[in-house]
Image (tube, rainbow, N blue to C red):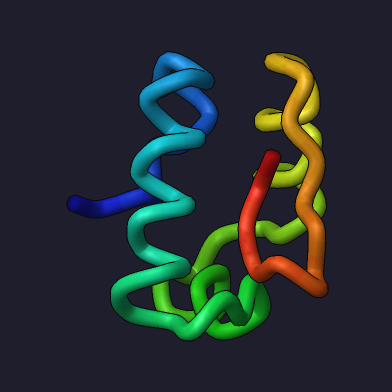
Length: 63
């Protein structure tokens, strides 16, 4: 799944996709994920925050 159009995605679906990618492919490293997909980290964080999700670095996922 390509996350380059994340700003147009349903935030609940985006939450699920991002956490799955973080867990399965990036070992919880958000910087690696945004670099791989060439997306803006702060924009992704803000998009998920609109649905009430925050990134927890110690957990390596959004909650």
